[in-house]
Length: 238
Image (cartoon, rainbow, N blue to C red; front, side, top):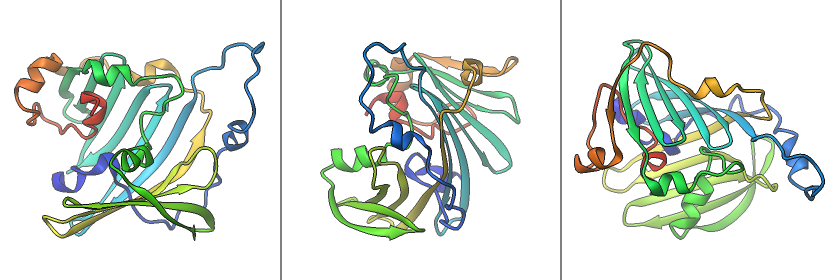
């Protein structure tokens, strides 16, 4: 199962349940901001991510509030929780009550912004790698745009909603060295949830190994502690 989750930062599965309506925030995004209005609260988001490959299926849940992230998935019967909050990246096994707390790089922290969602940014990744729009189509009853990049590493494709939010709906990654494909679907996109800041704090009583970013980098980003680092870009800023 570990191999199945290695690509989970960009991965998730099956479109069958993807009939949930998109958030009303799509209309909000079209409105010009009111300079006299009070500062808006940090936007919050939720999405369910289903990933599948030849190895199996994995389910992940994502919540965010501004730049804060909470992600949960189950690997080999263990509930793995990832928290990104300010200067610290937490990853721990909620079942065994242990994990790591790693200082985030300056580059990662510099990308934090109230309106920058920390997950579901697959289109940005593909475009940054040189990807281009290759068409428009209907996917599960929704109008979407399709972007693709092909290089020596393989092929990455992302389907996003055809609206100002450009939410990822499906991601497909073909790894040329292995010949394997991971398909991903993001389901049940929901916006403007009331989420308390404490939801993005680690539970009390955990046994956490603490490392600075420099200490982690000195290990050449090899696994540390009992759980995998699933969303490396939020730790390194790369």
